[in-house]
Image (cartoon, rainbow, N blue to C red; front, side, top):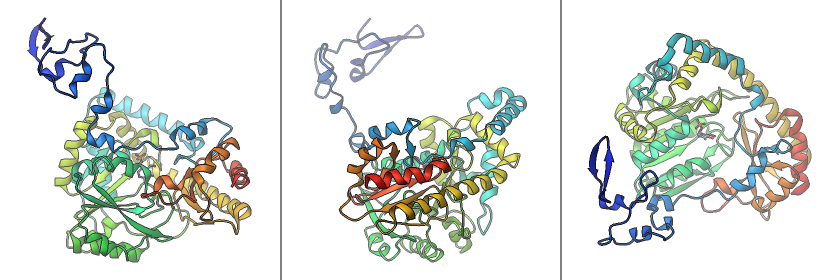
Length: 445
Ligand SMILES: Cc1ncc(COP(=O)(O)O)c(C=O)c1O
């Protein structure tokens, strides 16, 4: 066989010269002897692949988390983990999930195991549209794309909008995996400082003069700080979007997990209520998920946006994974139809609210007067600030020796700030472990 040809279905297909040097199903094709420039030189027989020369520019911008390896030990059962953003596994509703999966298999048979539409199961898109059509928002399934977790929504938005000369505004600190998702695409992150009420609006007008393309925000119980954006700041932010014509992604995975205080309107609702966009998403895109209110293993989330944006996000999703798991979408839908979400969210709020209180009291007892932290009204995290000379990255190995873990705050900051901070998760450790975990932390600080 000619080296630049492969046999397929009885036909011989010509393949491009550059690809001819790649191994095809175990048969190493010999490189054409002439006409090969660097970087394909490396594939000459007998030489080791130099993958570094091949990576795309965007791949080179990816950053490995400095603590990933360290935190692998948190899987050991003796470790009290305040590190991951994990729900409490003992609360997972296994019998209810089993009943829902059995019911959909019984009712739908092969349909729920088949390939599905990229945009998502129509009834689930309808559910999302219906759920959000309140307080001025009037959306339809056309405004909804079901995604593989909210994380995919973040990635798709980055892919569809950001070029390497673009700027994106993020709170500092912000959600670590948003930075990972957008870093390969974006030219520059513009950091907005934040305080106990979230993103500071005073800093925004100057940043918006730099003409960023996107703003990313988690207004409720932010990850990592646990802060909530006030109503005044929400209104101001929406006004700024309209004034500067900039798009925003409102990421709200934790909004339903509120332990005190009253719910505040989504940015999506504030914009819709103004009437200019006639109830439809305009500058605001919204991402949501069942990960924190049902279970993350489902990997079902969604994004709400103008239909033309949904169309583009759908094209990007098709290339990424064709569609979100059909059976997981039907299982989520079944749980929703059975009213399980309304039953389960109060259970989670009660349990996580109690764990938050236990963590706050333990912090007071062991860190009182030595560190600062906030009191989150919901969600799963709080951020502790130690005196400026502390470096929580350096202290982490000592904490792990004591079988307790956290995430150093530096990981969530751009520009290497936040060295003296640590993010603590209070939803995953069992209530009876929380005080002991905080005591161990205090002993190594
Ligand atoms: C702020 C934020 N956005 C998005 C996600 C992704 O959630 P999902 O499990 O739906 O992909 C997380 C997960 O921890 C998060 O903290």
